[in-house]
Amino acid sequence: MASINVEVVREYLEHKAFFVRLLKKFVLTGAEKDEMAAIDLACWNPNNNVYEDDSLPFVLDGISTCGVSRAIVGIRGWHTDVFSPSVLVSFPQIFNFVELNEKRVSKTFFNGLDFKRILVVPMLPQREQIRERSIQMLIQRNVTHVLEFRTLLMELAEESEINRNYIESDILQILRLLKRYDCLKGKQLELFE
Image 1 (spheres, rainbow, N blue to C red):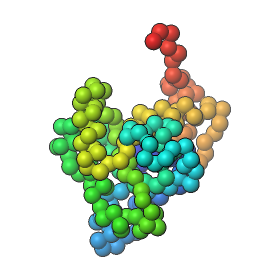
Image 2: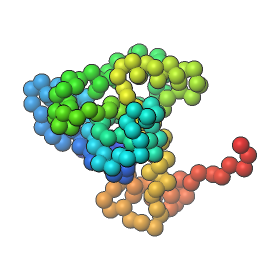
Image 3: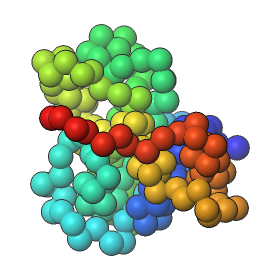
Image 4: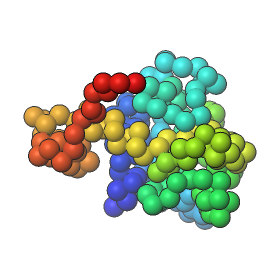
């Protein structure tokens, strides 16, 4: 069974109408096995007509995620860490999924077509200067986009309905129950900006 982090990301991408391939379910052999093991998900969006691929922001949100055509996804669910420059330097394995043989990945998942490299992280730093340094480090290591878990979870929570039974999704069912029993509140209205 995939980790809860992978399941949340998979649920989010499927909610956005992506076709998602969970790599761990497929048996790979030899060099492919070692090389592909760093990829958590591969996804394809048959409906990306919102953005041109080059105009997407680096940090994706709910709308811009729909502009991605094809991507491999690395999920780093280290929920106690902010992905600051010091964390990025200390843990080079964060980037394992982008340092793969691009031709082999493209052939294996996307029939030779170009693809993006999305890293899903708990959160980037809040302070603008440190955040910008983290983003530059990620770009230098060939990460094309970042998704933050907060974005995924907030959107899934907003979309879950308390009067609907989500038999097909444990994630949505848990979010529904949290909302139903007032453990999870919707966004509060802002009175002052």
